[in-house]
Image 1 (cartoon, helix red, strand yellow):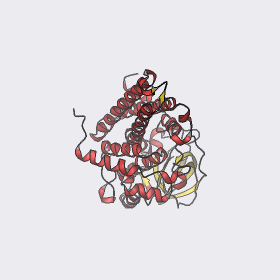
Image 2 (cartoon, rainbow, N blue to C red):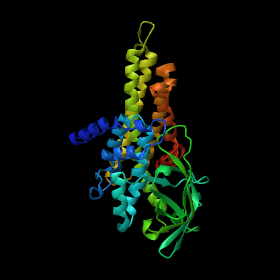
Image 3 (cartoon, rainbow, N blue to C red):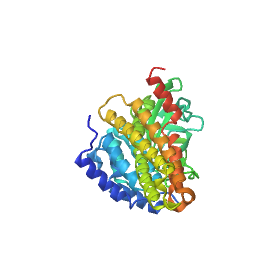
Image 4 (cartoon, rainbow, N blue to C red):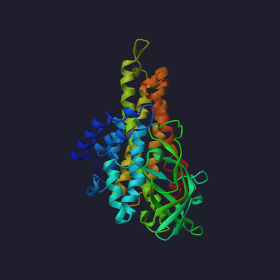
Length: 376
């Protein structure tokens, strides 16, 4: 067992961390721009785990997570980190692994270069955690599919050029009755709603997506009919293992801010970091960060080796997300009144962390997965 990262990994991490500090400023107070997205792509972040022959870097899960961690540590706009991660892990990964050859290369090249933005359209009003209740349908019509239905929460939706979505092709098939598609924004019958107003992750726009007799070429189906549920779970394995590395990076940056503040802020004639009420809080923040980091790295390590990683990814997702919320609450308390004000960025860290316990499968669902894994 070796806990060191290689010289090459450290070099890549440092390069991304340095570049990430210049990213995210254009989207402060609004959604990311196309120029900003292309700047992220120039760093290589939109194609980390995509094949080199299509412009990607060809990294495995652990290396991808390390890069996303560096991105999250350097970039103060966690919404942008989330947007890129969702594009890559929930959308590009299933296209990479399941798209037909005739469209795979075309889409992956654009996704890697940043010319295309992808959105994942799975959640419906009545089918959030219970994906077995999907009502969107897809009916084969010659060399096309006709999609009908509405998706309620598509991150990147307002900016997206391609939507990875899931629809029922066999109502009697249950788990085996769902099929996945990569739908171009230009498809007839695709309607994208206005951006939601959200609590956090503001630089990542999200919206409803409606399919009204939407005609999608059969060549844009991912995998075979009925493989959709398995494809979705495959993408969620990558997302739960890698996306939350961005929050590990956020917690690293946040901890450094808290330490610097505890050293410089003086009360009662001495730095507040000399009071146990502050120093022990910071020590606990460090403990949460390192424990969740190790669980995340382990999940990625298992994924890279083709071993069963489902429970490990759920453990990592719960640990990282709950640590991010708890550490952000502690950060607000350490900064006191100034932590409640927007200029410090501390309150934004809390708002950006709260949704992490909900997306990629709620933490309640993750605990169900963990409970089943231990034999309950």
